Image (cartoon, rainbow, N blue to C red; front, side, top):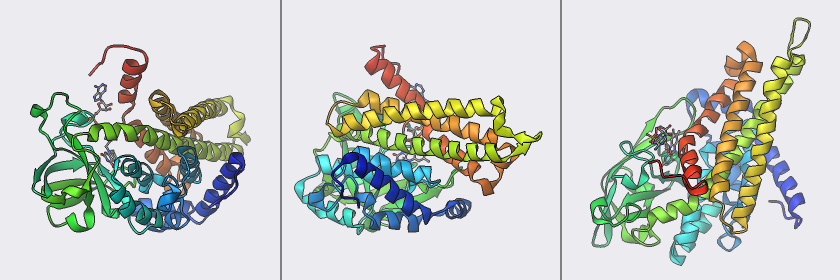
Length: 389
Ligand SMILES: Cc1cc2nc3c(=O)[nH]c(=O)nc-3n(C[C@H](O)[C@H](O)[C@H](O)COP(=O)(O)OP(=O)(O)OC[C@H]3O[C@@H](n4cnc5c(N)ncnc54)[C@H](O)[C@@H]3O)c2cc1C
């Protein structure tokens, strides 16, 4: 990892090092995995070995001790190279819950192993099939029986569960009818998937329009030791919210990387492709959508950097993190549309990778939070409008 003390230099070194690592994973690597819907194990392994998966883990636990700003550089560069960090990005922000709310014993037990790559904390189980964005109504129950929680319920869209050793679960420990506020009575519990699978936990993969290793997870009286509770029982929703700003900023940086990748490819093609005896890029009808998308990617990138800087200096950043995610997801989607249009028919050919990245970047309008829910947050919490849901 880079060691320079000057942050600009360090950031440039970090970006160059990630770009170098990504050169070993060219378009063909991602394309072949996409066709097979296979997990990029070699890529995740290389990233882990180089220490980048431990970017946010403090040095005392064996990590790089860097901030969200540096983590955005890592993720943006992966996406700018044509890759997809969706296979592993969650480790960066799930670990935050353990770091902020876990006991010292849990931190010393897990974080150094995660930093070394001996343990994977890649899965975060929040979403449920019947309650969707209305998280506080989730139905998975963890009932305490002696020294164990007995978990019953179902989660959906739990990404990377098949490629993780641990899963952070958000479950109800007090039924909804027995709490004063809906946000109370939810808890975060670490599930050791190596022991749980086949002993009360079943994972079923879901094939999606892009390669994302997402799954359904079923809990059928799964027993989890009480010491796996992270933080205080009943406070899990608060812990979830705590981690969401980092998640929003990091995902936004992936969108920026996608946006820049689309524009690089589209401009290259627009200069090379000659129709009617001139490069198609000479036509304003081709130029303007690319120029507009470029302006929006650059503007969104400033918001991502601003939100990351606020986060790293421990200032409130809920509005900025949400706006960063909203603007970056819109800008990457706009760039994707401009890029596929610029490529004409070739935009639909697998060999050009535009259609693959087009499918991949579309996700960010929906997950990890849908655009409408961000707008609802801004309307209520920033603009002071009545809560709409
Ligand atoms: C590929 C993929 C990977 C994922 N990975 C994970 C994961 O690892 N862990 C995890 O826990 N979850 C994961 N998710 C789930 C993701 O976070 C949810 O899909 C997302 O939050 C939206 O929830 P939903 O799908 O239940 O949609 P719903 O809540 O059913 O919403 C459907 C639509 O209605 C709109 N809507 C709903 N309520 C309102 C309202 N009040 N006002 C306006 N519009 C509204 C939404 O914006 C959305 O467009 C993943 C999803 C996908 C597709």
